[in-house]
Amino acid sequence: MKIPSIPSSEITEEAVFMNRRELLRAGTTALVGTALAGCPAADEADAAPEAGAGDAALRTLENVRPAPARFRVDEELTSFSDATTYNNFYEFGTGKRDPARNAHSLRPAPWSVVVDGEVGKPGRIGVEDLIEPAQLEERIYRFRCVEAWSMVIPWVGIPLGDVLKRFEPTSNARYVSFETLVDPEQMPGQRRRVIDWPYREGLRMDEAMHPLSILAVGLYGRVLPNQNGAPIRLVVPWKYGFKSIKSIVRITLSKGQPNTSWNDLAPDEYGFYANVNPAVDHPRWSQARERRLGEFRKRPTLPFNGYGEQVASLYAGMDLERNF
Amino acid sequence: MEEVRKSDAAWRGRLQSLLTPSRIAIGLASIPLLALLLRFALEGFGANPIEDVTHVTGEWGLRCVLLSLAVTPARRFFGWRWAAPLRRTLGLVGFAYASLHLATWALLDLGLDGAAIIEDLTERPYVMAGMASFTILFALAITSTRSAMKRLGKRWNALHRLVYLAAILAVVHHFWLTKADLAAPLFHATWLAVLLAARLVWRFRNPLKS
Image (tube, rainbow over all chains, first blue to last red; front, side):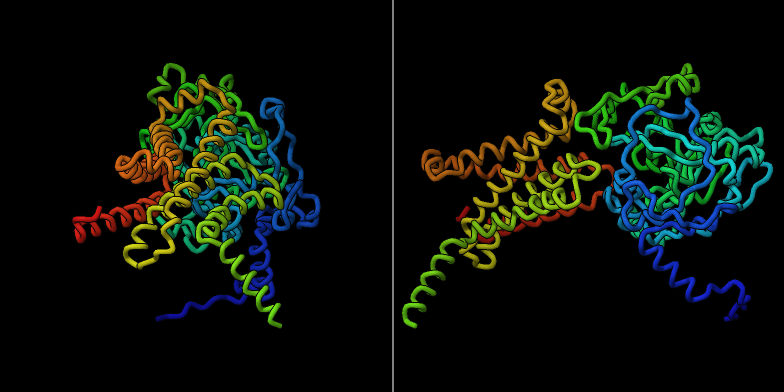
């Protein structure tokens, strides 16, 4: 066997390596800081809102443009601790508290994303080049899980459409699909085949180009914690949460409708569209109401999660009972 | 010295009569609920406490019933005669958990909204299975006294065999509400299958005893 020679410049110094191990063990994603070029190093560690010791090290994102009114829900924010300790991210376990407990093993930097399929300029690109820090803006969105709970989260990201355009979609591009990382070392939940890994999600092209759809790299003004999908995730606020795929490593544009994980798992329960719709119940439970985390009484669920005015036209003429 | 030893023995006797298998079982079976309350007290309610209470009471209600069903096989196969009273005790603790589970659903989750409760009970198979299981446990709990046993005579045995149906319905309830990870319901289903098999083996070997 031939032993490849590695230039010494590529070997991580032990001190740096050990330090990184410690940081990761503490549940931080501080290293993403070095990935997002042009940002100063973490030194505001004590300013995290309601953060635990691990999350306090999350780097603040600089120069984020505040959310424009049409992208800002005027409702009380879910607490940072609820949003970062109550998560569905089966790659780290199927319990709600598992991701916060287990996601320290994820290494969100360095991280690259493959963009391929029906694009003029396919390629692999570092997340720091995919999301230019100067473009970051805040979006305060409702987030409604298919399990009938909801949050309000201040995301930081950029419109998905702006990213896709740079790869020059061809005229054949009618859908876009996303894949999460597969690496059971980093994602211990993948040692069990609860889902046919990798986790996949997809959108119709017009949904992807809609200004509400974003790729997020942060929340609450800080870098995304691992358990929330570091370093880069999708956020589509008018759809059930499972559409908003986390820790993305591949974006593929295609002519045909892509397979998506929950739809593959139970096609009669989770549709490809998965638009929030109080009038169409999940076969096993009601979608008419939801529990906003932190509230006692359930509140009514809104059509398209309250974004109907902006997105209902995308589905004009479609039977939403059938295309659930 | 003699005095001291006597009072030692008295204390030991008192302790032994206090720490019956049933009392110990009740203490142990309460741990999951106490642990949850302790977590609430120390760490706050967290993101979704209603869900936490629902899961802990449902899960341990089922487990106590399954443990109660394991008592008779344990007596027969391992000769644990001291365990006999645990069948009733664990069954009642299971019923207590199931009652808390039902109350959490109706009161905390649905806020006693009659229409929502009726919708759940008539449209959602997993709720129906759970409610059927609870109804059986309720009937068994109110006939668990010595006087009820006497009053019902032979019918008491027939009635209380329904506990197996209650357990099956509870496992089905769990299966039907699970999204993707079937590990927990499969664990309980296996446990129940082993208990049912043990009962069949016993019947086969001892056709005259029930």
